[in-house]
Length: 329
View 1 (cartoon, helix red, strand yellow):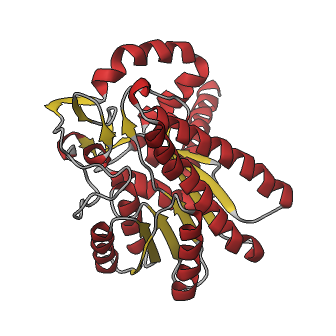
View 2 (tube, rainbow, N blue to C red):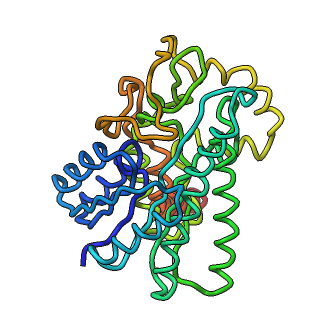
């Protein structure tokens, strides 16, 4: 039977790339987001890739809408096998200029949207004692940066919530798989439609990867029993560096991350943003940084093939030992 997969934030960016990744494997994909034009585009792509699509317009910040969406998915497509929480919202601004309403909304979408999605998924998966939930995280869930306090705070919250829930599932002996993928900077439409008070156009922290890199990592994470999956060498360096010397990260980011999150182009003061309402039109998976974005991650390949690497390493070590032994005799 084809997998039944729910993807939140599926109208654009990483969520849309995730939907395509599952569709290429023949999955039935439920597409949850607010933007109807983006959802229509995502549906076409899923069907063209060989999957079956179900569009469910949903604001993930509303728990009742998320629960209703989950019920509609199971009624139409069957029992949910995989639930992926990818929806997010951000505000690019010094914290002192962010309004309470803006901070609340970004937190509701990014953090509570993940909580509500997990609740709806577990309500159905726990009685069946099977299923997989993937939280789409970020290296910023370990190492926060300036100008995105709401987003960084929400991703930290998602990691804390996920770690707490994981211990409960382990205590209960549940076979529901819970994992988190920590992503690097990605070339998505987020930087063209997030609310911003920066003087110049927002951009991802380099190095930048294409959303398909993240999508493949998340597909893998949904089917392999790994606690967390780090995506991109930059994520590994960021997370490990913060564990070793967080104070050094503070000073480095204070010096570099303001300019590092902005292009040289000024921001259009009249550009629409998606914080409270979806931006019209279909924006696809990619942002405006295709020329700078990497389509592959050797680090991710190594992460997802570490069994083979260990076997190869053992083979090399055995050959070296045999050669040394022959030399001595």
